[in-house]
Amino acid sequence: MIRINGMIVKPEDLNRVFTKSEHKNIIKKMATYQVIYDYPTINQLRFELFFRSNTMKAARDLNESGLKFATFQYSFCNREFWDRTSSGGFLLKPNVRPSIAILDILKNGSLYATECATGIAIVLYLAALYSIGSAKFDSLYRRLYLRDWEFDDDLPVIHKYGDDFLPGDVLHFNNPDFSPKEAHWRAENVVFFGNDQYYGHGVGIRDAATIIHFLNSKRKPNSEISAYLMNLITRPYYPYFFS
Image (tube, rainbow, N blue to C red; front, side):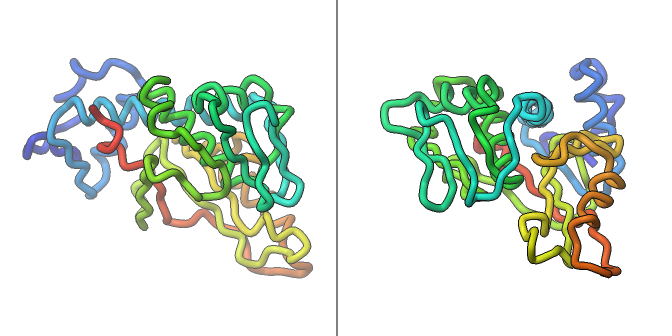
């Protein structure tokens, strides 16, 4: 359910306000759940929809960038903009604009390699850039660090359990019986597009069955425990970015 300024609204009440099909689809999904999506103003709902669309755009852009998959041990980056840390992360060089550096991953993806959690972190930073603009992004992320889920304090995320999946959410496939020889495939973090489509760095844009089949190929020999889509949802705290 959607509540704006204390009142429950239906999708049809918002048809004149939101005309993009992608936004209408998200609104329809929100309305089908018993969870209440609460907004003080319609503009805050508008901004969240904008950010969610930008998250999906960022995932598509990264999928087409040529960014390579590698474990932290073998990660690499464009040294013009980033320093590779001893743990395999990418630390923004001093006096480099964060917006230019993060966009370089899309421009020169073949100069970068990392694993799936960092791939999703890159998606969320790109979505933030698309949503708030380069000036505010550069102000917030002066010493941007890309590694795993180690987000900057200025990119707050919320983790919650539930099945109210919405396009633009980050979801998680778990592979509990992963092979110790390929421990990096213990899970796959993905951006949800709706209609059983997910982007994960290392697997591309696929349906759930294909991702599960891939993860199952990375299990211990003779394992009978399948990978599965968890009911864990990760979302940026959208009100933080709204202004």
